Image (tube, rainbow, N blue to C red):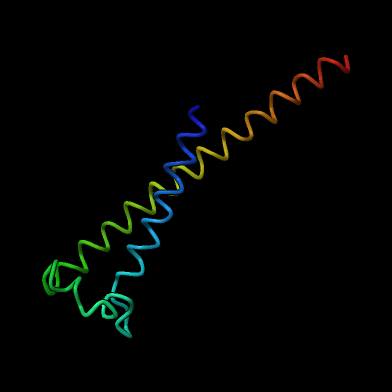
Length: 90
């Protein structure tokens, strides 16, 4: 059940992270300017960069945490199988 919850959170964070990165203005304008500069109007001139940069960092940290948690949980099953195999060999 925990693993299913982490999978759902992981997918939502992944999609949100993609959206946040695409909304940021790069050197060439990025997708933020493709929407008519709507992000600059909503967040203000310089406020959008700080807000989106922080949001990207938070999303990346959550994404990494869920990735490591899912990797640990999936390897826990491997450890249990090895222990059972070692008991049968003895």
